[in-house]
Image (cartoon, rainbow, N blue to C red):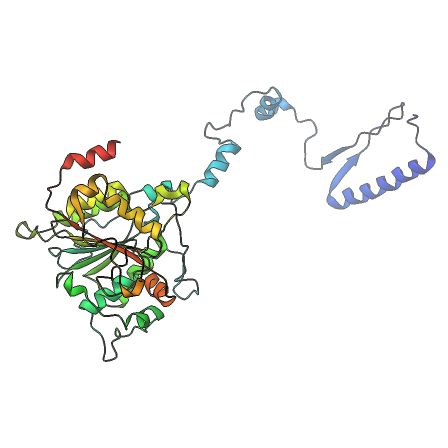
Length: 396
């Protein structure tokens, strides 16, 4: 193919050159075009700034010379990061080493989603295996009198049950039976028909502690305590119970006066409607583990109670199984006959009445739909705790 240009092509080149010359003249640049070579090759074009020095040599610029010779430039810093390192910096999470329960909530109280939360989390995820942050003076920071027995609700959710329980037993209400300044919600209205039978099972004076693994939920619950004026006797802690329970109960027990330590323990523990984790590969995520049962056996005294309930029979039996095997059967005796039936759940196993009378939020919903609830009770027996038991479990 010939490289010779036609007259039309030459005219097009001339027109384009005129356009470029006009552009460069307006921009303050000089466009020089050396003579074209005789072999009709494309004409090279050189663009120079009027203020530049054409005679400048690369020898005058050691940086340019080093670049041409593929040598490191004199000004190159050893701290220069690669693009890969820069990407790593961008991807770094500043909250990576902060427990999720200590991170500030991004939800505004005025938001319509303020009280809505995801239903499930994976307790085995790395961030939920971190120890929760506690005030240096915990439990003094949360309780006015640390020498009282403790009511412990594991997996307390938004705290509605404990708020209602503590409010009925210790709170100040107006003539209509409502907390001053607090509007009755659907749950509070739904519990009014249920009789409080806690005096049969609970001491007249107690502290109350709710544990919840979902960070936003535990923060929301604690704010409700302050609104209802129950600070000093009721507190919520965001944590993974299978990580922090031993530490929390140790701190609570060690805070007691020397002559009060017999009362300074979890006297009543409830685990109500926990996440069932239906899938077989997720059963290890369930809250009631052999280690948790052993920890309860370590701190509870003879006669103290563990109350379990769920609207899913398999979930109740999975919890019960941990109390009738291994250390569970060593330290706990089942109080209720699992074949007990009552009018509320005729023909169902584990159909005992709720010993506390006051239902949880989930319980109100289930009973409203006339569905069964499965319950059982365990009492701490008189067998003394053997410290080596928990060491063996941790090493296995």
